[in-house]
Amino acid sequence: MTLDETLELLAQIALVDDRVVKVDEAEQRAQLTMWAAVLRDVPLRFAGEAVGRHYAESAWPIMPKDIAQRWRDTVRDRLNRSVGTIEPTDHPHLDPDDDTGDAYVKALRAHRRAIATGDDEPVGLRELMPAVGSRLGGGRLAELVPANTEFTEAKQQRYPRREQPKGPPERAVHCPACGASPGRPCQTTSRGRQMTGTHPSRRDVYDAAQSTDSKGDQS
Ligand SMILES: [Zn+2]
Image (cartoon, rainbow, N blue to C red):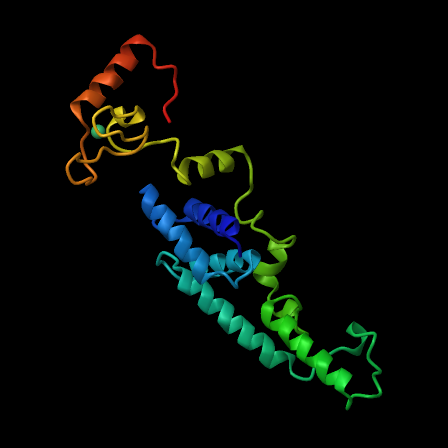
């Protein structure tokens, strides 16, 4: 799954469990990077199903390893179940009567590779996972949470939170003392450490902006 898909997955998870996605923006970025790395080989649709299965069985917040583990189990399961089930009809270039030749071995290897990566379904898999699979039908995560206006707003609100700087309201403006950009926390001028408060001159700028005209540009 790509970085964008991981972002989508995290946004979806945030809607069903607000304990998972980090609140702090820097932590969110680190979390996204970590999840994307762990789930690189996992298709988004599978991950969405794995999330559903996790919450059907567990009260714990889902971790990327939970999804990765389910994927590894599924891959192993797929490979085990696919042994000897190659369908000649799926490989029209094969002569079904000649199953001793190189072509057969090659096709079998390609078939196993495809199954391992999820490009192909082993015989019987579809029948074995109808509960979640068929409901999710068209793939992606559309049915996990309907993508209506409410969802779009919730996603916007929860991830990422760039438009909603946390901390003191004066963070909305540029700090003349330490040079912090709008939305970023002030830093100590001597050692560059992040401050929980803000510089007095930044508050002055903010107050001035509020009293004259805030123009509504909070970011
Ligand atoms: Zn400052």
